[in-house]
Length: 125
Length: 197
Image 1 (cartoon, rainbow over the protein chains, first blue to last red):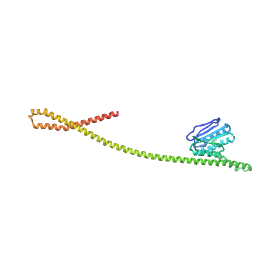
Image 2: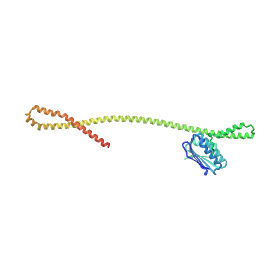
Image 3: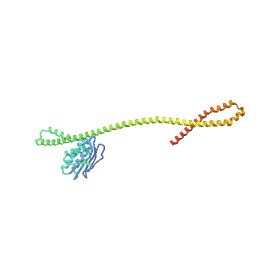
């Protein structure tokens, strides 16, 4: 299974999905004009990964800004991780936010309240 | 990886809806099957409702954040406009000051020129007076014996000669003044060339 490594741009986030280590991360801005076009390959990768996951999967969200359609894509990714967790695989999510960025912290809490998953809110120092 | 590209982020929900609509057309479903489908549909609806709630909250926060950024930009723009107005005012003041300085410089230069002219005029007068004394001595010592000898001490000739020397004093004064002024101008020009080099 191939890993995904995408450089971030002014509109799309940096993506690093490593199937060998189980370290997955998305960071930066997510305001693509066509969110599904950007996220669909990531969904497909996750679907394939869930079939043969690592013993431990850590997904890190380190976003500074995202638009509404990206929030739906984030929810869908979290649901896939939730499904992985339900298969009794060690699945953890870290949601990073800047100190004083209440919007991003509250978004993390919203996702946490909705998804039955171990989501850790981490304040960046 | 899938090859078919979905139309939007709600593709999965659209599929659920289409499935529900298709079920309505099937007549020979058992009660258990319908109950199961209803349960699945309720579950999907619950998920969609929760998603809508979260997305609405996220969207509201984004809007507030954008409004905040817009207000900050608006305030910054106002501050920039104010600073620009102050700079324009300062520029106008500077132009006025420069014009005032230029005006004063011209007046000062005119005064300096006048002063130089007066100083040179005094110097020229001194030189002319010295020349007059010299001529007086020369006429008394050298010309008078000659006049006595050749013109038999002609009073009128003597008077005309001395009057001629006296009348020559003003052109001499003018010539000396003109020469000194030219000398000053030449020296000023030379100084300017040296400074520019």
